[in-house]
Length: 394
Ligand code: PLP
Ligand code: TYF
Image 1: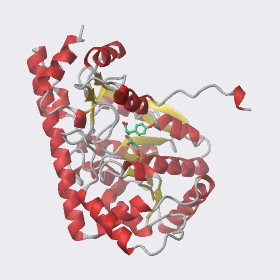
Image 2 (image 1 turned 180 degrees about the horizontal axis):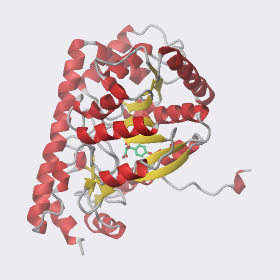
Image 3 (image 1 turned 60 degrees about the horizontal axis):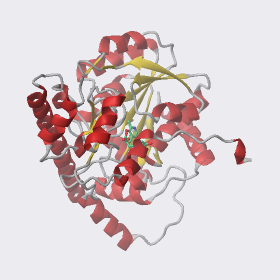
């Protein structure tokens, strides 16, 4: 039967992991997959998580099923983390999901059940997994302009103009913070205008928040989501703990619904859980249980927030250092946007051929669209790296 199949194209970001590992050059630099790294290039288990896992191992006396929504205390803690202390719990429901990707798919399945013909608007560019996840659930996909590659800024007016043509009931997927792959983000005033637009046109906001705490801080990164939640009748959210709790492989995320009222929230939740049952039944517990312990315990939570803040500040420092080095080496300000972007990523604005030259000639690995993972920048080799980048420019 399988002889009829053609090989599926590789995930270009994940493929970089293997290419980088196979490169024998000692000075190679990994700016590829979006995984946080410390100055030694390691992605450690966070201190509070390690302690929570220890407590879990000692205290857990059963591994019996939890049920379709997973760990409900985890779900509540995740809602509070995203929506803030003012979260209207009467209208919000949440289900644990296998990572942010699982949450995206779960929400998409709910949207398909709600409006089978609906269209999801995605930023151009966006995370390459967004289109397949949305299409996988049977939704139609369209783009809205987002990024000006020359200035490194958000094309806000063009974005608003495109969304102004969306039909009532269309879904607008928005990166909650730390836009992947561009690093260019909406400010609070822009979020307020988007909020007005979605209310006016009857669009459904769908916030993907996968880097909360990596941009301006835990609360500041949720400003847009909270502005929306205060005004819109309905919205949906997919959140991920992969990055901000560093639990990547444990697959921890949450799918959230804000409905018009409690009764509609219950019905929507029942449909979302039915979709989970049809895909994987129940989510994996371990990572979510550890995250829940961290969020519920004052001491562990304070330690997690402190370590997360160290990570955020390290990425900010690296941004400034790299932008400075590029300014020195290129005698221009064309890369200054790197310092004003936030989150793990920026796009350098190189061609695929220039990206390929950096890999072949210098052992510098980045995604083909010239997206760099800021956390992979070398603390002690900024000028050498900047020199390499400048050497491949026209
Ligand atoms: N959404 C965006 C924009 C991402 O970059 C990621 C990747 O980490 C995710 C969602 C979800 O990732 P995961 O499924 O590993 O939690
Ligand atoms: O964009 C990134 O690098 C992260 C990690 O299929 C990732 O979001 C990349 C590709 C993928 C899953 C995760």
